[in-house]
Image 1 (cartoon, protein in one colour):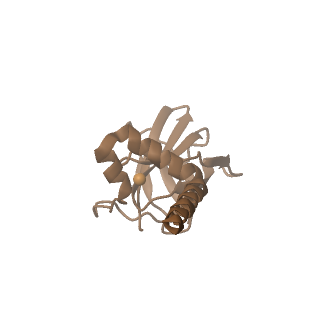
Image 2: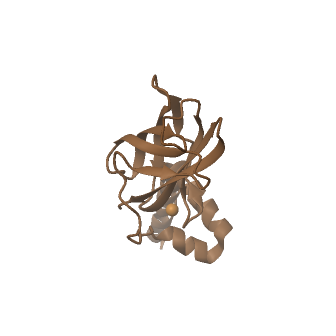
Image 3: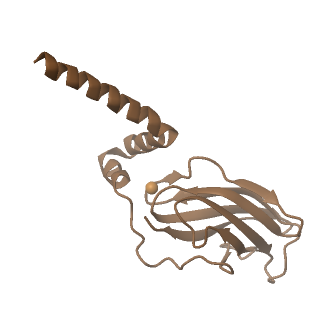
Length: 171
Ligand SMILES: [Cu+2]
């Protein structure tokens, strides 16, 4: 019996260490699961498969905002196609006529998994390039397999608009 109690103690320590090692991501997932309740916890436990309706993302992929003010075109992506965890993109912003929107800014970016209502855990880094209308959006953290939205908020003389790239991350 003594022996057995000892093992239980060691197990508890190991579990504790594992939880600490999981860090921020695990904390966030537990918090999300708690907010969403039992159904949410089950959804969080399994990585969602994409339903096959998401067009593969590649160089030249474009997305236009709901008002048609801006279009973002993918100029480069690493890795390509997108993969789990870190993704670095370069985008060009076009105006409603398809010309380079040289006064437009990418003011914010966010990866978001709608199925689980969580983001990428930290904000990507946005930097303008030397070329008008071109921006680097680095460190997009697509940390789960399944369907993601990569959201870009654009501001310029045509107004503000949110653009969304739909992305499927394979497990
Ligand atoms: Cu998720």
